[in-house]
Length: 183
Image 1: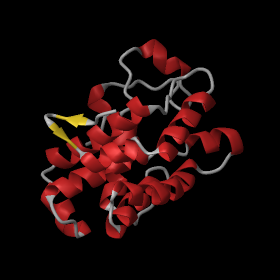
Image 2: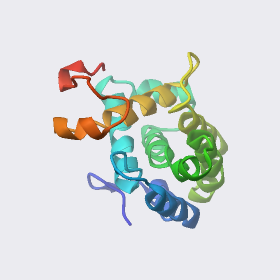
Image 3: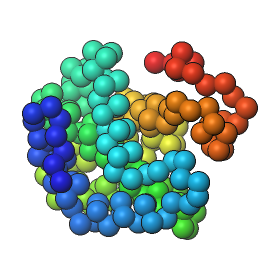
Image 4: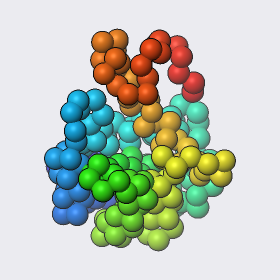
């Protein structure tokens, strides 16, 4: 599978998605989803979140800030870190479905095992794993990437048909439109 971003291929992100442990857990996510499948945690969702996270950072002109704040080596390294966080953020969702275990905590542990095999360095691994953990464990002390990943995950759940909203738990009886989103 190739992770094409424009013309460039993010080599480490490609290694990540081709990792057998990543593939196994993604398959477990798909098999563990319950009806209605309103929130699918498949590869498409992960890639959507990765792209939205990157867009949020670019739209706010925060890429240079993220590189400096995180101690990353370049903008390309930052892009690969952002994409890795998005691609891994719900990797442990199946564990929550089947055993009630916090998917973000479990996912950050899985990420810590997968990332070095994709050639992410220890600093990058720490940044990504923290963001994966924080994306659903919100606190006042969230990292920059954790906060952006959380927002991207929420934005990835915009559905245009109001009938579809009626099926979703937690948003029944709420009027939702694009102007209600906070950026």
